Length: 183
Image (cartoon, rainbow, N blue to C red):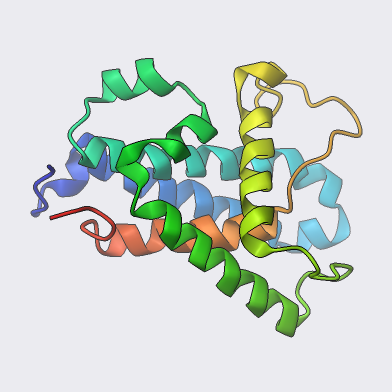
């Protein structure tokens, strides 16, 4: 169990949750930028890369907070988002994220911020499918497509949805590092 005091953000767990918040915030800045509006193809891969890395850090935070060492986490999980998501250390994070998916979906539906979406899908299922696919793009099975070469016409999940969901969770965990960690 982690100790949360004035030096918390100097620990591996503290650095990891702070990094998750930074990467997800940077992805949000790019996604909602003026450049995205005029030339989205310029920013799509970098935005999704930042998003995937931020999600990875968020999911690793709970493992580190659960007492695993950074080396053990790196060796056991690498960049596998689905394996990280399913780890027992993220048992409190998963329902929090899935509930936030519903909230983000409803907010987008009523605000009109995702034009062209008919909102007929289930938000939780959509989130899990998007996590699986971004995990593929972020991992070794795709040759780390988001870091190196993205094959033309590669499908990617909706970044605004994932940013809204995972960005919110990272922000909340940064503000309250004990959130979603058993006492």
